[in-house]
View 1 (tube, rainbow over the protein chains, first blue to last red):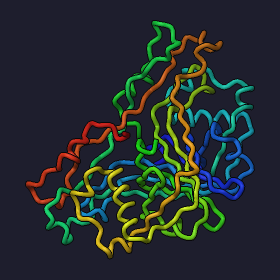
View 2: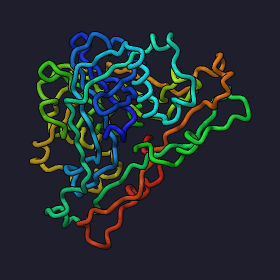
View 3: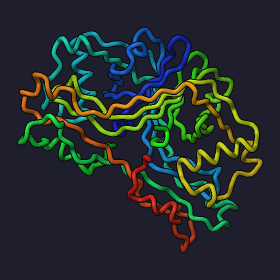
Length: 191
Length: 191
């Protein structure tokens, strides 16, 4: 499920108030890694967090308003985050995060310098306490009394794909997007 | 910004722990309405909540790993939710929610019965304390020393559209998807 999403919503308690911030992530079998470009106060000195990744697959359009819903896949991870300081582990987590979002970029672009690493806040949350919820069925009222209404019912899928790369306006002419970027066009953003 | 999203992430504190649940929503100028199909314990007796709506517009692909990022629009709403009990207000909020996700369905399908209304948990959070964050620029390193690396850099957009309606397997033959559903195919899911 985590392979299908790109943005996680990180829930933390800050001064007694809940706060939910979007952030990119990467993962391996044991941990999910979250980037620290979000407000740093939401990433330091916190206790338990909840990380939720949701992929919207479509709408469930039923015969009654009450039975409407969405097709989705969602993962919720609870845990106490650890900020990664060890340079090797920091590079490991950043590589997973980069390659999850943009496969091929770790080898194509300049890797973080020691100074950049020191300025990077990367959190790891163990995947030990995680649950996945999937809603993928059709509407529930096809065999009930509302079927007699004669209304259309079914699913309206979401189709999310990568578009055409748009070059940085400052890019000199003659540099084409490499295959690991240009080749994504038209492919699903979820994997 | 709220018009561009479909799923909100609701952050609440449950027994001292943060919890983030995805949910559909609707809104008017004053309130955001959240559906109660999520775990009811996250919707009752809570204090302040944080509702975050995020739309991913694309990836920022830079010359260095450090400058990578995402193009996105995000709204964060803080407030104390009120559960709506008044039947007129409940219908009002449900209509906004339904029409935001699936325009035209409120008039096409059967509206909630009093029994269904009583079984519906709808929360309203005032929009008085809301902030919007937008990241829509190209990479930041086009004028820096990394430009000399000669790597491609730019944006890879996300294209999210509605697919082709899929009829409920229980739907009798001869009932076609109405224009307010079938007409969405190929159009952006964000508005």
